[in-house]
Structure formats: C-alpha cells, structure tokens
Image (cartoon, rainbow, N blue to C red; front, side):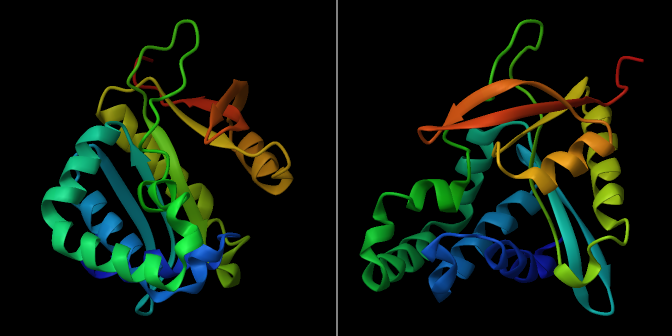
Length: 201
C-alpha cells in the first residue's frame, strides 16, 4: 500500500461499514490518515490489488498497535484534530464509537491463548470491491500478508470476526484459517481464527 492508495482504501472501508460513521466526509478523511500511517510500516503494513487506476481490494496486517497509533498521531495530529471535531459536530452520537472507528481494534492487545506469545500479527481488515468479489483477489491479498508475517518471524496470522458473519467465516475456513477460540472487543464476543505462516517450518 502506498500513500496514493489511501483515499480509495478508506472509501472501500466505509462502503462496507454498518455504522453511521460511514455517512460523513470526516470519516473518510480520518480513515485516509489511518491508512497513510499504515503505509509507514511502523507496526503495520498493507497490500492493495490495483488495476486501471482503481484499488480493487486491500488488506492490512498489524503487529504493534501502539507503534501504529503513535505514528498516526505524530504524522497527522493537526488533521486528526480538525476532522475529528468536524465529525463530532456533524454526528455527536459518534463520540462513543470514534476511538474504535478511527483506530480499529488498536486499543486492545492481541487475544492470548496457550502457546501463542504476544504480540501477534493480526489481519485487519481485508476489503474487496463488490465488482471484484469472486475473482481470487482476496486469496492473493491473504497470501501476500502471510508472506509478510513469515518474513517478520511470526508463526501465525490471526483475525477476529463476528459469529454471524457466515460469508467471512466460510472464506477464511476455505483458505486455511481454523477457529482457535473467542475474544471480547468493545464489549462484544468475536470468533478468533488463525493460520500458520510457515515461518518456523
């Protein structure tokens, strides 16, 4: 992922959110700042599928959420401040969910389970445009992320998903993720899935 991809990645991200966060311009600007921080490869990285001037899909991996958050704040504090204030003026009810919408799950440590040391390498998020779904892009993006995680020495990549997100669960299971437990984020229960990277093979 390069800086020129970030605005399109933010637009794709917002297109699939259920929250009212997706309906206001400051939300896109805040997410664009977030993805620009991801591009710095400090605690996180991203990959895009790009064709004919358009981002068809993207994936991010996060292994040090605190470092990513610091990079976001250091690089973008004026923009974060302005767009956050504008967002709250337009939709004050978003105050409670703003930290998780801007920073994703960065405020939470990786879920722990026996035998899996922290920190971990988390897939978050993966989004493919509706027009390109079923084309194999998602699998290619996951493979790129697995290779990156292995190169960084991580033995596995994990992710969380909602229990009722059956399409996502079917996809993750088909490409090799296994359910390994559950975890709580933002007061909600999520399913925890993991896949080996082959780093220690």
